[in-house]
Structure formats: C-alpha cells, structure tokens
Amino acid sequence: MSPAEGGTAAPARGGAAGPSEGGAAGPAEGGAAGLRRLLAAGSPGLAGHLARHGLLPACAGADRWELIGEVERAGLTGRGGAAFPTAAKLRAVRTAAAGRTPLVIANGTEGEPASGKDRALLASAPHLVLDGAVYAAGLIGAHEAVVVAHRDVAGAVTEAAAERRNAARGRRLGGDHVRVRVVKAAAGFVAGEASAVVSWVERGDARPTGRSPRSGAARPGAPGGPGRRSGRPVLVQNVETLAHLALIARYGAGWFRSAGTSAEPGSMLMTVAGAVQRPGVYEIAIGTPVSELIDRAGGAREPLTAFLVGGYFGTWVDAAQAAARPFSAAGLAGLGASPGAGLIAALPGSLCGLAETARLARYLAAESAGQCGPCVFGLDAIAGQLARVAAGQSAELGMVRRWLGQVTGRGACRHPDGAARMIGSALDVFAAETAGHARGWCRAASTARLLPVPGPVRS
Image (cartoon, rainbow, N blue to C red; front, top):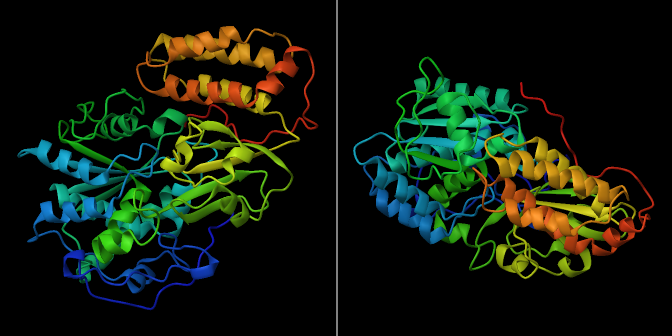
C-alpha cells in the first residue's frame, strides 16, 4: 500500500481548549494535495503530535453528557463498517455502567485482507488513536482502554503507549487518568468483529458471538487468562472512529462537519485497491464521487468492469453505474451497496469477476468460526458449487441462489450474511460471465488474481 496523500502539518499549537470553548481552528487539511485530518505528515512521535494538535481536553469536571452531545452534533458514526452513531454508543455504555467501571476497546484488528486504513492510521498517527481512546474512557467513566492492534503495527502502538507513560511522569498530557494497554490482534477475518474482539481481550478467544457488545457486559475471563474485572460494560470502537473523536474533542462539531455531507459529515479513510496506478490508503470527504477516488489513486490501469465496494462482506457493482455516485451510504444505496469498511477494489476487464468471487467465497468459507451449520456446511457448499461454475464444470446456479437464502440470517454470527451478500451481488453483476462459464467459455483475457486471499495462519 502506498502512503496516503495529504498536505503539510499545521503550525505548532498548544493549549487544551475544548469544543465548549468555541472549537479551535483545525489543523491544515492539505488543500489541493488532498484532505489530511487523520494521517499526520512526518514523525508519528508524541512531540510532533502535540505540536500539531496540542493537549487533549480533560473530561474531569466537565458535563460529560454535554460533551457526548457535542459528539452527537458532529454526526460522527463508526468507521469500522456498521456506521452506528458514536454518541448513541457512548450514551448506552455510560448508562449501562450504573456503578460498574466500563472498558474501552479500540478495534484495530483489520481482518479485512484488502484493507490497509487502520494499519496506516496506527502507524502514522498512533497518538491520535490513543487520545480518542482516553477521551472515550473519560466520557463513559472508564479507567482503562485497550488498543487491539493488527500484528503489523502492534509494536509501534506499544512504543507510542510507552512514550505517553514516560511523558506523563514529567507533565500532564491532557485527558483524564486512564490506563492504556496494547494487545496484538488475533489473526483471521472474523477476529475483527466486535464481539470477537471483546472475547479476545477478555478470554483470549477471538470468536464472534453474534451479540452486540455496545452496552452489554463482556463475558467472564477464563481463570488466569487475559481478561480482568469481567462483567463490565464495554465500548468497542474502530480506531479511526476514536481518532475522529479526539479531533472533535479539540476542534468541535462545526469543524468536523465542514467536510462531508450534511447527512454524513466528516472525512473517512479508505483503501483503493485493484487495477489502479497507485493503490493505497486515502483520506476523503464523505460523498466524494467514486470516479474522483479512482483519479486520486492515479486512474485505472485499464478499462474497468466492476468495483467491489465495502470489503469482502460488501457488494459488487457495475463500474459505469458507480462512477458518478458519491462514496457515501446515501450515494451507494441505489446500487445496493455501502461504504462498509472503507474499501473499493477496481476490477479490470481482463479479469473474470466470477473467478475472483469464487476465490473470495472459498476464503470466507475457510474463515468460519466453526460455530454453526449455515457457516460450516452452507458456505463450504456454496463455495464449492461456485468454483465448479467458474471452472465451467457446472451450469447449476439456481442451487447457489437457494443456498444463499438458506444461510442468510441463520448463523451464530453475521459471517454467513456478509458472505452471502457479496456472492449474491456477483451473480447479478457478472451474469454475462456466469452464462458464458456455463457454456464453457470465459471472456477474461487473463488468469491473474486481483484480491488478496491470506493463508489460514492462526499464530
């Protein structure tokens, strides 16, 4: 992945004026070079972070409900895929605590194989994420925040947390007194699901439960395991969401809403993958047209036929239909798609979309948590039949469509639903290719593979 585009860092600024004091002017945002709110230029160290953003405002002594109201006015939603309103999560966990001490978990697992946004953020601006985790903890009354970081960047985040601890011995960094702990994320696609992340932190078992941990209690930790003080309400937020929260704490809702659309304000990090000149992570204003995203990545390497939008649980869409659409929930809804995990993968005409989908289906079937029949047997059967169709060995697609309907909504978690959505969209968008394969031919000129499919490593 190439580094994100962006401008230069803002001039040094200090102080800790919060949004209630008028919302300080935000950092330089890159201008024509591209929006840069999150991904800092230069060193990711604490000194550069403080020079760019100043101290984090403290929650102690403030009306925390009013501070949560500022988050609501900003319109911040989760950047991990579900786009749930952040203020609603904060309120739910704070209310559920009711005398108990809650926990904040920053989810930087990034199990999505084609995505790189969370790793880029944690490598470029770890202190912004740590600020957001500390601020969220202050808002809900937590004393501990756990950052679950992808193995590629866990070391860097651990160093950043240690740097903050060392600095705090000599001077106050801003924010309330919150213990920050860094945990290396589990491997695997389902390991990033919110309930799986809670289970990993509390029990060392990254298995999704299908139940939302927004305001519920974490399941008890095994004796001697990594979990402590189990039974507490847990706030799980994607690391990008928390980085935005740290900026809202400093610059206010009005500044945050100066990018994006009125209905979907702010910026977002996204990964542009596939047949583009400069695949990588980019920060965009929500609502930027899809065609502009491709241009930002240097343009297409060759004519495109389709995009996979939102990740491996996302939706295949026709490239021509999507080009003029805004990259937002509202803009993509007419195509049956959503931004999801902030990913768009460009499929060139020289590759077969059906063959790519068959590869992804086999990968997703292998990534089952092994908890239910629809996932273990259903996805395996669907992947097998789809592979036979892609290889020209079968013309029976009615069976695949029927099985997709049978696994949807019946799993122990949402894994079968996401896989079925992606596969079903492929059957619609690649209908012509599918018909050709059924007759023993494929119009694709290349057998190259576009999207990454990791091996089954579980270390």
